[in-house]
Image (spheres, rainbow over the protein chains, first blue to last red):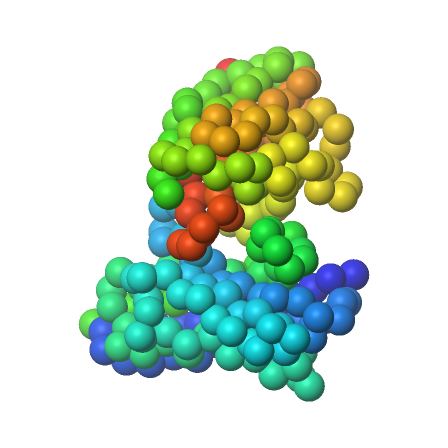
Length: 122
Length: 106
C-alpha cells in the first residue's frame, strides 16, 4: 500500500524557516518524480514544485510564488522527500501535501499524503 | 494557463446525473486531471489524461474533452460523492487548478 506521511509543519514567524519531510512507503521511491502542493485555509489547490528522479538528474521546478525561497530535495536511501522553506511570508500559510507522480511524462499526482499545516504569523 | 470551472457550486440529489465543466485559457491537449476533495482530507485523483479512470475509482465517474473544453460527469450521484471537485492542467508549467466546484446535497 502506497503511503505518504508529511511532518514538520507548525507555527513560524514571518521571515523564518521550516523544513517539511515526507516519508514514503509501499512503492519504489527512487523511480518516481515527487511533488509538493499546498492549500491555504478555505482556498483552492496550488502547485508548489516538483523533483524528478535520479535518472532525470533530480531536476526541480517551482511555482513563481516560491521560487528562490523554497527548495525541494530528496533522499532515495531514506525514501524521503523534503521541502525547505525560507523567508516565509504570511501568504505561505497553508496545508502542504506531498504527492507521488504517477509516471514520467505528464506529471499526474496519483497519491497524496494527509498534509501538514504551516502557519506563518507573528 | 488559467482554468475556469463551472458551476462554482451545485446542488443535486442522490441519483442525479451531474456534469462539471473546465475551460482552459489555451489549448492543453488532453493533459487534464480531475480531483475530488472532502473536508479535511487530501485530494483524490479521479481522472487523468482527460478521460482515463484512475484505479479503484467507480465507473459512474467519467471525463471527456481535449484542447480547451473538458467535462467531468457523475452518472448517478451517491451520498459519498458530495465534495469539492477540481480540474488540473499539466500541459505546461506552472501546473494550475480550477477554482473548484462544490457539490452539495439538495
